[in-house]
Image 1 (cartoon, rainbow, N blue to C red):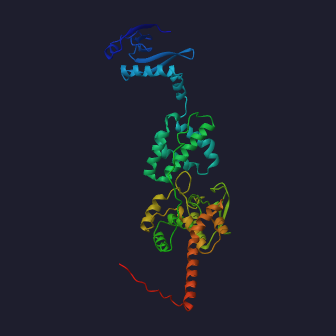
Image 2: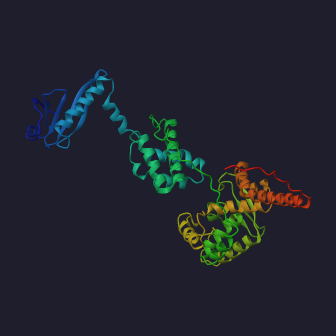
Image 3: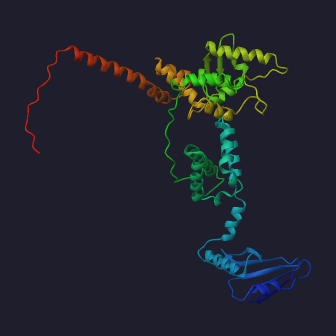
Length: 410
């Protein structure tokens, strides 16, 4: 135990600056004459730190308030008074600080969430990881209890302005889920800062390719680079999800039988789907297979890429520039899938056929698309009914009613 020198002095900036230094491995202790247990510890290297000591739950608790001169005398006295007040009300700031030191950061909890939940239940876990890092990058090093509801609500609003309400709502749902699992797994005992925040209103997208847009669509697409052109055509014609088309493997394609099988482990709803390929789809795949066979190192993927996955992963920039050149306003890649469903309904396909073509697990999803597309058939039927009723009316001898003249007063 080092030798202590205990003295009471009036804490002022000048007095603390002029305090003597102890010998090596020794410490000097100086107590504030204003009380409250505030004292300063001086080391032989000249470091000066403010402390307060209080008896809490039957034992002495020593609490470091900060270093001098980073912490002024006035600030140290204020912190000492608040510490003493907290103890008087039964709290233990030292225990809270110890708990905080051992508490997980948001980034650490998300890694637990990723390993213990997402990778087990979500095929698109890598996309969730990218989204979380993108939305909450500045918070990854923060302790869980330091993130407040006000912080999350503010970030929710910022994301809505920067990326749109849909992205903001997905971010809110994601951070809620991470905290919820932290509570369930007993990794975090505090409140969930994502609860109690109202999400922005969302409207389901209804955008599909219209009849007057197809000419611009195909004319512009013919001028695009081959990989992009083939990807877009297969996405539109098969109605498959973007991720499945990009990751299409030759092992899953049978050119002889004319089928493409999307295995359950690659399907979003974990249901295997077998797509019987049409002639335009087979033409594209035969041509790409010929090109692949002549490669020095043939790829296992229909759309090979240079990244870790081995296949193309992102065509967002190409799609954006293509949409601008084709004058296709607010058309997303996923809208191609909805377009196929819509035009299948317009040409007489029933709900069960469309549901099977899109591999929907819930028929309600298909009905939503079908109902929107069926409006065209409904309009045509009403127009036919109107025409028939009006023609019937004209064929009858209708005697116009004579109006009785009446005086008009001004």
